Image (cartoon, rainbow, N blue to C red; front, top):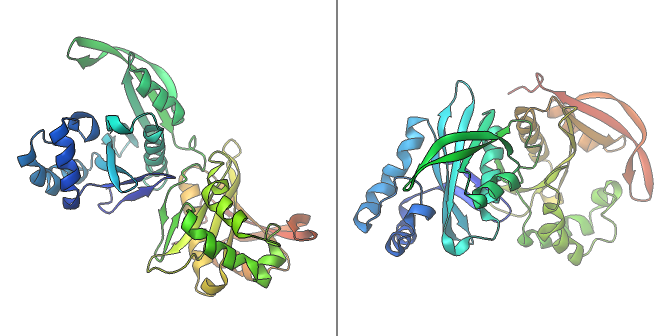
Length: 360
C-alpha cells in the first residue's frame, strides 16, 4: 500500500526510502551515537547491523502496510528520518514521527519534512487524518506540530513513558482538506516530474518567455522579462505562498529542458473550489505535456477534498482551450473581460472539473 519508490521533494528537502547507498552516512551516525534521534526506531546501534538493516529491516514496516520510514535528505546528506506508523487504511488514519540530527536542528527542517509527508499522505495516498503526539514537556516538538499546521486536540494523561516514568502527551491532528494546496513538493505523472522551481531553471524560463509570441500574447508578466526576474521567480517568488497557491515546474522524466509550469491559485477550502493554470515551453509543445500535467494536478486536488477545479482561459487562446477539453474539463461560459493579458484585459472561457468527473 506504500510505494517502494516514493520520493517527496519539498523546498529544501528530499524524503526518500533508505537504501544500501546510505551505508557510509548511517555508519557515521551510529558511530557518533546519534542514531536514536537521527534514524528511525529499530535502527541498529552497532556498525555490524547496518547492512542488514538497510537491506531488510528498515523496509519491514512498509512491507507490512502499516507505515514507512523515510530518510530526510538536505544538500545530499541524510539529516534525519521521518515515519508514518499505526496506519489503518480502513479508517484512513496514521501517525507521524520524526527525528533530526542534532547538528541540523534549529533550521526549520522538521516542520518542512512533516508538512511534506502529511500533504502526500492526505493527498495522493488518500488517507484522511494524521496524528502527531509529543510529551507535554517537549516544547520543540509542539512547535513543530504547530508550524506544520496541525491542530492541538487535547492531552492524554500518562500516555507517554520515558526513563523517568509516565508523562502526559499532547495530541495534534491534521485532516484532509486542512492542508490546502500547500504541498509544495513533487508529483509524478507518466512522463513528467512536477516539482518546485530551482535556480537551475532560470535560463530555460527566460528562453521560454523572451522571444515566444504566444507567451508574450497571453501572459501579462511576460513582456520585458529578464534573467534577474527569472532567478527571483525560481529562487523566491515561486516558493513564497504555500497557503493560497503554489507552482510546479514541469520536468520530463527522460531528461531535457524545463517543459513548462502549472500553478494552483485562489484555493478556497471552505467553498471547495480551486483554480489552476499552465504554460508550456516552445520546445515542449504538441507533446501532450499540458494535458498530462493538468490531469495530474486536478486529480491530486480532488483527492485532497476539493470538489471543483477551475480553468480560466482567454477566448482567443485556442491551444489552451483544446488542452482543457482533452483533460476532461467542461466549458461553462464566458467571463467578460475576465482575464488580464499584456496591454489590457480579454474575455475568458470558464472551464471546470468536478469531483466525480475525472476519468482514467
